[in-house]
Length: 92
Image (cartoon, rainbow, N blue to C red; front, side, top):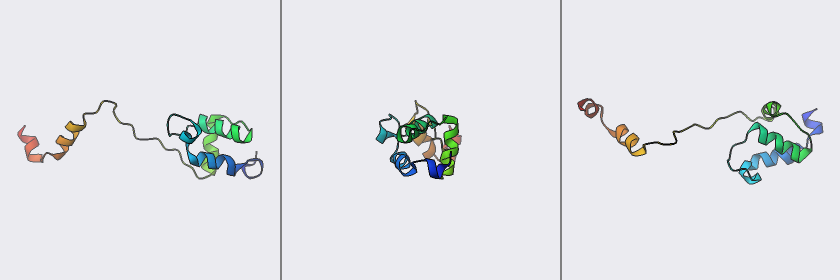
C-alpha cells in the first residue's frame, strides 16, 4: 500500500500527535500495538504491530524509550551523598 495515496494521513496523524492519553490510554506512551490500533480505527487498514515502526519512521518519528527509575528510591540519601565533598566522603 502506498502511504500517500491509500492513507488518511492527516486524520490518524493528528490523533497520534495528540497522544495516547487523549485517546483513553492509561499511560502517555505510544506502543506499536496502540499505533496499529489507531491506524485501523481511523482508516480501516490493519497493520501488524511489527510493521508500524516502519510507517512511523517514514513520517519522521523515532523509537524512544523512557528512562527507567527504581521503584523504591532513597531520594534523601541520593541528595545527601551528592552534596558531600570528596574529603568528607574519605573520612567516613
